[in-house]
Structure formats: C-alpha cells, structure tokens
Amino acid sequence: MDNESDKQIRQKVMKKDLERVQKVKSELEEEEKELKEFFNTLSEPKAEDPTLIRKKRYQEKMEAYRQVMEGLDFKNLMRSFFSYKPATPEEVETLDDCRRYTKRNFFLYAGGGITFTSGLSFYYRRELPRYMKLMGFVVGLLGGGVYGIIRSTEYTLRRFEELGPDYDLGRLAIAEIEEYRMDKNLSLIHI
Image (tube, rainbow, N blue to C red; front, side):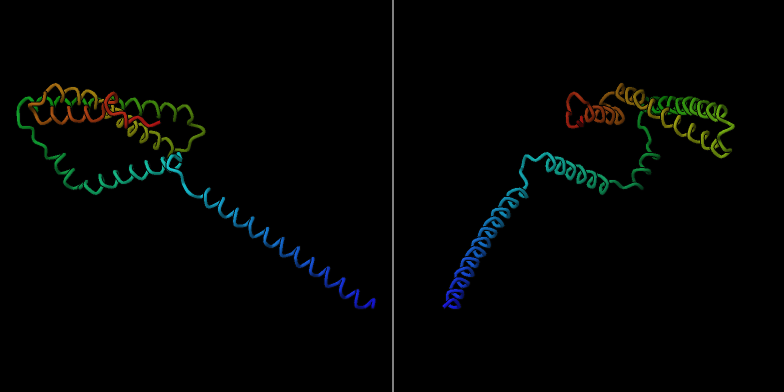
C-alpha cells in the first residue's frame, strides 16, 4: 500500500509540477508577446523625431547638390568664363578695373602672407627643417592670394551692380546679390 500511495503522491506532485511549468511557460510567452509589442511600437519612427528631420534635410541637400553637379559641365563653364567678351565699352572698363583690383589684392595679400610665414620660418629657423620654410612660402602665397581674391569679390559685385540691369554683368550681379541676401532668404541661415 505504501507503494501505491507513494506512486499516487509522486503522480500528484508531478502533475502539480507540470501544471506549474505550463503556467510559467504561458506567463513567459505572454511577457514575450508584450515585450515584442513594446519594442515594435518603439521602433516605429515618429514624424517629429529630430533625427529623422535632420536626415530628411540632409537628403534634400544632397539631392540638390547632386542635381547641381549633374547640370554643371566643367568644360563649358571654363570655356564661357575665359571667353566672355563684354558687349559695351562700360562693361569693358568695369571688367578691366575689376581685374586690376583683383590682381592688386592678390599680390598684396599674397605678399603679406609670404612675409608672415617667412617671418615665422625665420623665427623658428632652428627647429624647422629646410623644406618647411619652402612649404611656409607656398602656404603664404596661396593663403594670401585666395584671401585677396575673396576680398575683391565685394568690390567686383558692387561695380557690376553699378552697371545696372541694362547690362549683362549688372543683371548677373543683381541676381547673385538677391539670391544670397540674408534678410530675404532665411534658408541660408543654418542653426
């Protein structure tokens, strides 16, 4: 009898254990379903997410840049840049004046850049190897020259604008100025 009662007790315990295991399994499955639903709702992007907004703006900018680069033909651009022939004496005079002003600024600021970098090279002559002195000269020449060209663009645009809308250069300058005005075009201000 003891044997039978032991078997019955074992069966009852096993049944209870199986029921507990089944209960735990079902609870785990429910928790897993709830967690999956939770993570699915988390992974869905929201329209007002700042990361998505920045990514969308970046993609729009890259698309615009790609369109500009596709529409840009370097050969035609260089050909038209160097073969521009002014139509009127006023344009010729203005263009020559702007070229002289740009050339003067280029050499003035390039000379300043060379003087500055050569002075630094002379001051640190014991620490710098010889090729660095040449590199300083080249950096001063290029940096100063580029700065001179940048400084002369305002004067050049102002001179072209003074020609007025009756001339090609005047229309070009007015369109360029209107396109990049900060008070009208707020999309140019990046925060």
